[in-house]
Length: 324
Image (cartoon, rainbow, N blue to C red; front, side, top):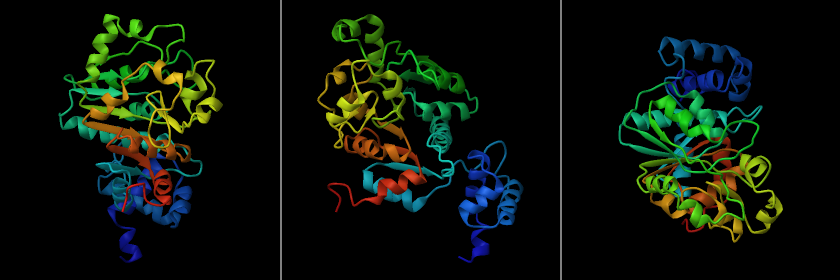
């Protein structure tokens, strides 16, 4: 395609608008990242407005990276891969994915197929919630899938489910429990309380679930604020952990590590997660590549929302084990 025609295409204009409006880059920064002149960027923004592609948000919610998405779908053995263009200077691994997740969720909710939606917590989901417009879905129930932390610096783990419910006009059920039980607490007795029995029963009826993942480092909110004081990052890594999904630390093959913390996590069991029909993993960042792969091997998601930088890293090595 001639360069002039390419730069007049909806795909080019959409990517320019994504960086300008969603990633909040200047026109000069967009031009530098995309290898075009600032004039071309300015023209693309004007064309987007003239074509009614941009209102308050980008009309085309995220730029389809068709080849990368298809490669990720095949590599990870999943049904859907959505790749958003990231702002790489400076790189924010929550913003672009959060915006793409918000748009994807709205599209799915408008189809009216979900009645019960499970939600984890994390900065990516919190970012998505903030970007979602108010919508009425009164037949929907948001179910929190993981206990929360009593401390933190960036967001309230217990508020994610209720905030999402407020945005989409839905009911919500909060898992009012710590993410990990104290060593002295009997797990069976704790979960035997009626309030938890009712909540855990809802996990079996989830139509969809929104998951996040993180590594075993201070970049992880869970590692920084949620681990019991007697559990260290070093011992989790020594046990083979590459990261966590829903508070369960997994090894590179997607198997739970051999560590007592696994029995102390309060949330939806992994075997129940695997049975949820629509499982959406929203995660990005170089430090999350290993845990995304591990979660895919474990069958913990069949839809991935990520960014192009992470997509490149997920595809950078050779084929996954079992690929031909």
